[in-house]
Length: 210
Image 1 (cartoon, one colour):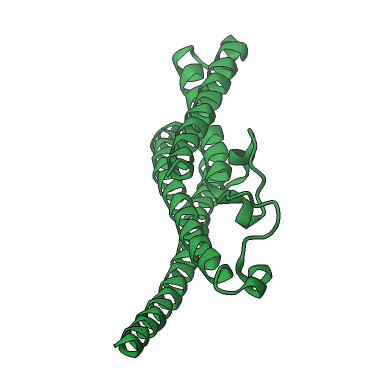
Image 2 (tube, helix red, strand yellow):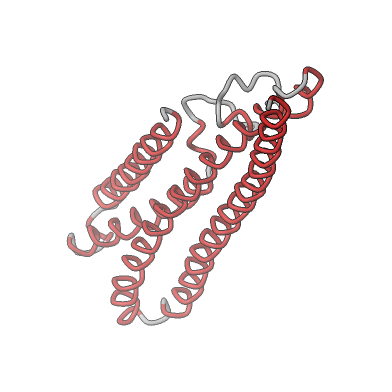
């Protein structure tokens, strides 16, 4: 009777550990997919921006066409940037979620035998932090170094430039003064960056608190 129970427990444990192995590889593949998607989306946005700049260079030869062209292209770029930023934050959150789940599996393996800890446990100084396993130090400015932050800053520049041109157009051109259009554009750009950082911080904080 006892031998049968031992055999069943051993079989259940072996099945469980095999399932953990499968889950670990699934999580690792999911991480790879999130990183690949982030790179693809950022590249798509940068390519759209660079193509727009090249097209603007050609269109700028005609002042009658330049205004309507920018009025259509700049808002489109900003909207594309917003969609890209939201998805980049999503993939970042998904990546950290996978890292946390993988860390739990490693800690389980680290507790199987005493000598397993150096091979499976998190590196010293991780302190249970999800970001520490990616060699990222937690701090006030950690959110500035994500792919989403890069796109957000560039998109804020595009949005601020569009607002600057709009204000200049409404105030009858830059001949009437540069201070007001540039000030409004800078304010809008900084507001966009601040809104993004707040949004990203809340999304990542939700992952850290679970």
